[in-house]
Image (cartoon, rainbow, N blue to C red; front, side, top):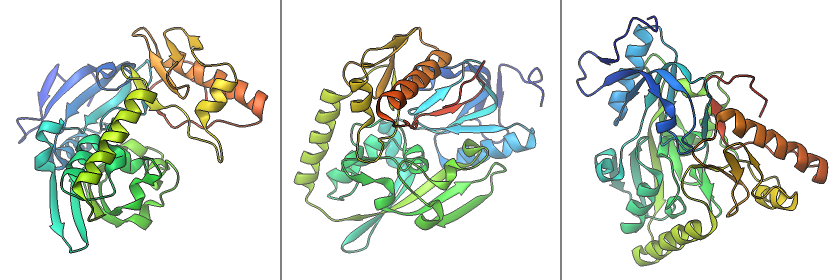
Amino acid sequence: MSRTATAPSVQIPGHPDLKVLSNAPMSNMTTWRIGGPADFAVRAGHPDKVIAALQWAHDQNLPVTVIGGGSNLLVGDDGIRGLVIIARTPGERAGQLVSAEDLGAETRLRVAAQAPLSWVGRYCCDRGWAGMDWGVGLPGAIGGATVNNAGAHGTEMKDHLDRVEIARSDGTLESHDRAWLNPTYRHTRLKDSSQPRGVAVTWVELLLPKGDPARLKQLADEHAGYRHRTQPTGRCAGSTFTNPPGDFAGRLIEEAGLKDFAVGGVRFSTVHSNFIVNDGSGTAEQVLELIAHAQDVVLDRFGVRLETEIEPIGAFTGRRGT
């Protein structure tokens, strides 16, 4: 399908709630509030809708990019070619995206990729299911947390992940165990693909040990409070760099004198130096320039190469390596 062949809004046949928008601004779809428009975009609040959108894009010969909550993403200033599937559901409607099976000492929880990570954390704590309290207060959705093996407070997604279901770019489904993902620190095999966001996580299954609901709720509140005190809010995307072995990226950035250092409309936060905040005028190119500068300064000062945790997607003008 050519970029001019589609009207501003097209309905995917058989799915009246799947409306494909053309020239859709991606800055509204990421927590950084940065990025140019997608050729086409559609919101898909359930795995079945993601599959339908993938099949439609395949029939139209469109490349596909799947995003979830929009955190840890940097969309290029020139936008994204093809169809962007926005796989997310607000917390107030996420109850339809989970089912649980009591296994005695554990609970098997099946969760759709669209469910917000923080909501899942609270949902589990309220029911006395341990293992997901670390996610309370974090942005993003379960699908992205699985792809990136997200984690905090000494726990990662892989620690309680049992199985993952994915949809290929033509909509075909596959089910795999945790080992297939080959999860490591902030990484899985789904990030190794030549087009990692052309494959969609649809469902995950978690094995969660039973715990004390009161204690788990207390932990969730502590985690949320800690993040409120130590991490910036507003237009930011989470941690910019992964922590190098035995150290912290934020400490290195601050010791290098880069706390509050700015390029255009983006700067390293004064609250936490491993976060880049956007004042509302920032661009993707400015973020890449700030990242490259920090990498150069930290390498020169400490001999440590900082690796990015955020993921650039889309088209960048004069793109620099990250």
